[in-house]
Length: 217
Image (cartoon, rainbow, N blue to C red; front, side, top):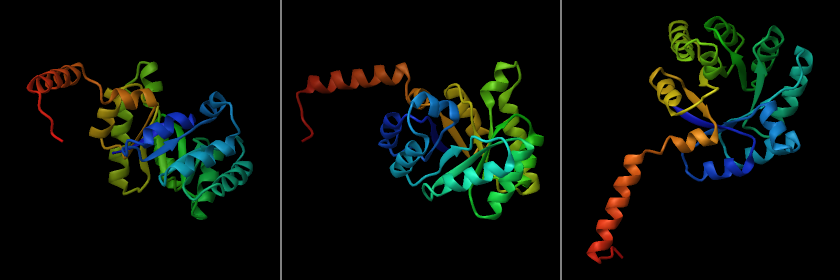
């Protein structure tokens, strides 16, 4: 399962990419607003950091304007993925762009039926929002499993991009259920590595090694 970082903070992204473990990035209007910078400028800067996919979302809600905006976004860099809402207009725009070879990420997916329609529209990625379903008392991870089964049965090539990730457990479960990608906030990405026993073990090893008075170099 690939890892994307879900942020528009270029400083956070630059740090994440230095690990060599991050495969791409997703943004949305809320993240761009939080960054407080020019939208297209931010996307261009992120695309220079990575050869991986960078999702940039359209602002319009009508198909014709989505298509125009999507084409403009795709001109920023070759690795831009146009992010579209899972509405009828969004699916119309998805179909039009997929026919022109423009990669798309259909977002705000909450049912397997929605994911099926997005696949039929030619979406490159489908983004089921796990955490928001959990917030409603539903099992967000069940949706990942349903989409995986549906896509495998129908032989759709749309990739499952697990979104609205709230913690390391979500990442693990998404991987086990066959998600192709998890898009993760920077703080969750860092939390994947942390464990108190790892910290204690390393501290003990360092202390014992220093006690030997030796040097490897």
